[in-house]
Image 1 (cartoon, one colour):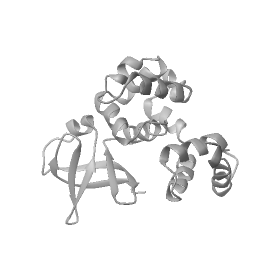
Image 2 (cartoon, rainbow, N blue to C red; image 1 turned 30 degrees about the vertical axis):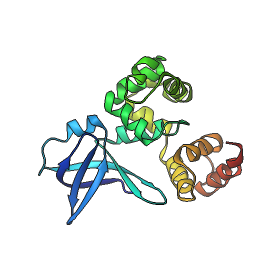
Image 3 (cartoon, rainbow, N blue to C red; image 1 turned 90 degrees about the horizontal axis):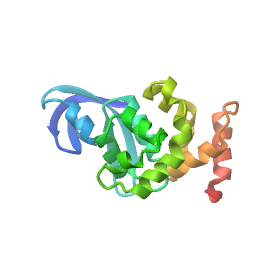
Length: 197
């Protein structure tokens, strides 16, 4: 996975930016908050990235910070929350406010994001509340790091490469992951529960 891109901001829209690097213009989908943080065109910027590969296309998502990217990945691990919905949530509030809303069962704040209904908001709260239980004592970055450790991310990326959706891969890994096991064994364990998820 590409970790980040640095280049000149050539064009910016409400939900995308074009970054030129080594003569190539990369179209990167971004949240509204990230768009507001980028400043003016012609300036050099850095975005953390996530690549989604589909049969017909490769889509590049960009984030102003690692924390925003981790929250995006965590949100899309929830069944029914796709990239567009996750970006809408990220564009409406800061990472801290989103996590606080999840902890406090504030479905109203989450559903204020375009295209996000109460039903989806409640599903997000149910699925993620336990992951964020230590938020009062930690920063958003720390909480998200705990929710998706590096080793878990490696396993999830491997399953996505094998053709599973990110949300299903994350559920498979969350169900079987053991810190004491090797990456290979954790991937095999996740594969063993694929049909039950």
